[in-house]
Length: 151
Image 1 (cartoon, rainbow, N blue to C red):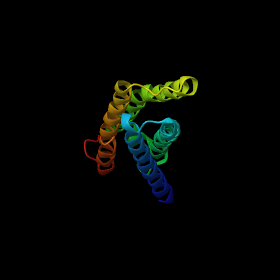
Image 2 (image 1 turned 90 degrees about the vertical axis):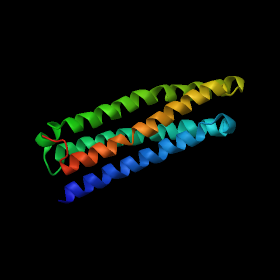
Image 3 (image 1 turned 45 degrees about the vertical axis):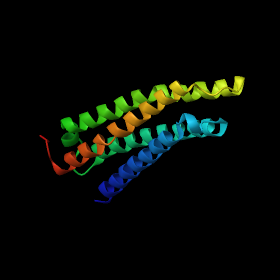
Image 4 (image 1 turned 180 degrees about the vertical axis):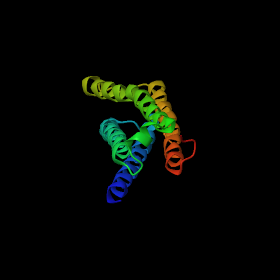
């Protein structure tokens, strides 16, 4: 019982951290606020966000493997595969932002130029899409935990 409790706690903590740093990214990626300090913070937040994403993935895999219902039950559930697919799609959708932050920082260091407003708006829009899609994953998790749409 302690294993399930600790795995659930770790997974929820990872979800909350992921939400916090996604929100931070959305708040920082605004053309009006962008300066060298914000660029540096965006890169740092993005790194932490990826660590949260990886921790979320690993804690979820740990729950599915060592959770109370057993690996056989979890891995036979389409909802688990849907959650994993969404998480991976979110990772793929977030990768261009990571590259943009690196590009922006390199440009700032070499030329002192900030990115164009159009590019910042595009990145922020992707962050907002991710922030909204990520809300579906905990819903699927609750459905899975309650046995809704399970086999």
